Length: 248
Image 1 (spheres, rainbow, N blue to C red):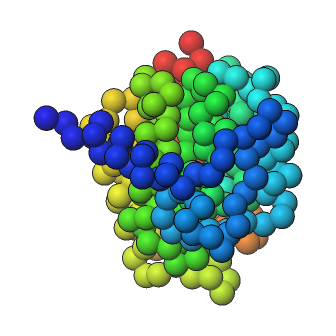
Image 2 (cartoon, rainbow, N blue to C red):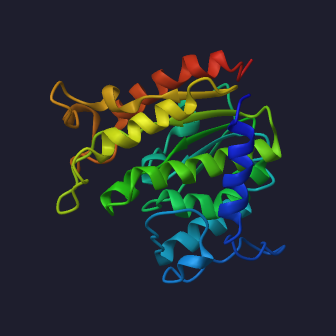
């Protein structure tokens, strides 16, 4: 017997126990106190900066026009992809990336920012900020699995694409050795064999032969993809979207 449906429901119930009040009609649910672990669903580091509330208010204002879209959810790797819609002209894209967000923060806002859009598909890229804050890869995967459970609860057939995170060089905030590859392996294994869930492995796309960020694909910070990097990322996603019959 496949234990995935039962595991997903258990994860969903566990993380949503601390998800806070429901949103009102006028805007998204306010972020809880970042010092109050019990108020946040999921596991791992919490980051909550003042600008994040403004990002979510902007998302809220687009809720009606972004119904039924292909939603990209994540941190600045997604949020900074400014020509995202132009990269997929046959699809209606909604960008729900927030710079600095951890997977736990994405999970907190996932129902309102993603699931409530009744998406045709969702692309999740999460975990880079978890690792820079020395979060455990296992906790990041718990949060990603909870996002998947929320999506499946809303629509059992929604298409889901899970991206691994690319190599990065962050001055003064290095990953724990081996953590990035650990998270990569967990995401790839989690997606294996699950219906309408596909993993896209970004690490080798953006890495040099030595496993470092390819400077031709990143901005000077060696963290965020540049235009060439976005072109490469989009090229990796197009056959996956075709496999999932999106944009037909």
